[in-house]
Image (cartoon, rainbow, N blue to C red; front, side):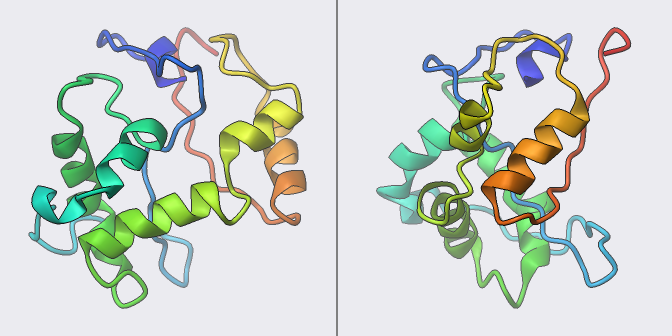
Length: 150
């Protein structure tokens, strides 16, 4: 998990879930465009989405400031999802829907494959195979952080 692969102190989610770090739209060539708009997240409009986002998409570096993290993800990645992603609220609703209602709950999928967030190294092929099995053989796109040659 990110807390085990980064020198910046952070706090794992208390219930030891694999959580969302971002929803990164890709273009038709598979590239991830960034910073497509200067719009920011309207925290007031998030309303009741906030509670769900704090569980599935927490800021593990600063648990008291999720909004700045979500804003960074929206500005850098989510704003590039237009026209599929209509605005910031739709971006976060889409992430919640994918995680909760479309059987794309990575924590659940990996747990079923006996892969738990225990802070130990995992083979990428095991993670990919577990996710593929859990989401109808679709290929997941992973971005791994290397830490101490892991």
